[in-house]
Length: 256
Ligand SMILES: Nc1ncnc2c1ncn2[C@@H]1O[C@H](COP(=O)(O)OP(=O)(O)O)[C@@H](O)[C@H]1O
Ligand SMILES: [Mg+2]
Image (tube, rainbow, N blue to C red):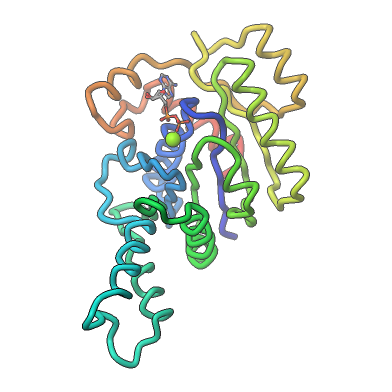
């Protein structure tokens, strides 16, 4: 059965870092095929994975809009605009060595943001069945969840830092998920960047208040900071780096 995992939470909590490490682990373990989805308009999942992004759904949307204005039209005679668009959008799926990558991106200027949202939903729904795992790195906030972009998510990983506001933010997402009656079988909390891997009493209290199900505590890892500032992809961290060890533990706990 294909499994879709969505990673959500406040900005800067580590969604992209953890998504990238999860994708890396699953694909290196041969548990694939894995589809990596960057659903943040400010795409940067590829930086964690250490790959270049050639094009995004947003870019292609722009190209199609331009094509429609051109004379002579680049749309082959006899082909409907819709078929042309579909072929184009399919070209946004990039094949890497160990996984495929789909990047949402955004449209330039005044294009409606919800348009790429809808596109993403269509493309993910079309592809997800062909992969053992689909991992979706979300933008901050609840847009994709509230708009129903990810209706068939099996596992939602809520990521927070060690702040009450971070935990409150994911608490709101958890309540939204509940109210939308999504199919998600598991909605779990990950606390990231915990000093010495420990939770303070205040954070424990907030987790209880928000009635969140704590899956894992990922320690603050100095090496992550170092790699980040030096522009080295996080997937190149040594296998015994605390974040990598924590990600292996997360994957075991959710039985992937
Ligand atoms: N466990 C960690 N230890 C230290 N730094 C981390 C850790 N996880 C993430 N970071 C850093 O926090 C920042 C935000 O991470 P990112 O994954 O981009 O968050 P988000 O996608 O939620 O906005 C990045 O600079 C990243 O390197
Ligand atoms: Mg991010």
